Image 1 (cartoon, rainbow, N blue to C red):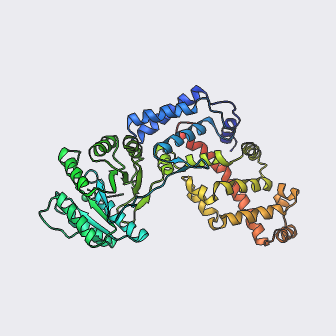
Image 2: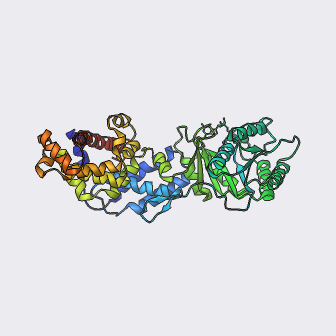
Length: 449
Ligand code: GDP
Ligand code: MG
């Protein structure tokens, strides 16, 4: 224990402002991390410049290391670049989802390269609109280039429980689109999803076709569908579609794969259009709202440790954290400290939430009974500790049957509750030791330790 933790606490004790060299070193690592995550080079340059500007001279927080602090700055820049605006409480906010605020039938145009997931996403959106918003949805395939494409959409429509435009052979994409709008008006559909054809790469014929359909149907949303695995090409694709056709939002698919998601950052930067939805699998249910903070964490490649550090930096009282750290180091962590820790956890959300964010802690989760970790339990535990004498808080070992009974009565709980608390206190001390180690390892992996 001591060796590794000492490093952490040495850094905890650093004072002053972030130095040029702290920041320069961190910037190099950030640059590499972003490039590895497939963020396009010009976008990487912008982000790194913004990070430097913001970081240099910033006062060092006492409870986190300079490296951690820079990571938080990087994270903030990424979240902003991904479209998360500041909220009153300082946390990032992003309003996900589609805009349907228009007279019915609302046309939604799906565009993108072949194989990016347009047809699948059309089915996913249809299912979501039907089930969550009770919309009457019509799906129409404008893909006349691939023979099976229209049938593919028809099958998906059946699965999603929505209608699809009857197929008439020999019509052009523009004719199909116009017919779809006509049918939708006549049969009072709320939403028409127009699924266009794609090409393997951007070409003028494709752009012209999509632009014509757009002009004729005036879609309320024009969604660019892009595969998350698209690396540096994402910029060209997004720019071309945006300039030639104009897009209102981006759907990034295949985030269930191992892509780091840098394409999201590139596309957002180049088009200014928000990322609205994520495709996370082949099934129709696999559609997720976009959360900039999650993708930022993924791009940085540090799991959600970033957001843990972030929340810790925001909520944990600095002086308190130092005291606690010193006590842990000396093995003097007691129930008094545990009570304080409970308060911190209350501020940070649930403990199980924290465990969920940390990769590799699955095993630990099994050891701690998660159902016992909601906030009402935290409050009850605080009451139990409140009923103890200072001596008991410092030496939980002296808590035998008669004392436990008294404490249970005093806090309006049972001896069983007191026992559970003591068990959890043990688990908690063990977990904090592991978290410190893990946090340190995470930082070292990122090269920022
Ligand atoms: P389109 O050519 O743009 O219409 O692309 P499709 O919708 O036909 O999708 C191409 C392939 O990608 C299909 O096999 C889909 O099942 C698959 N696909 C689409 N979205 C996702 C996703 O989010 N995750 C995964 N793993 N596969 C996807
Ligand atoms: Mg298709």
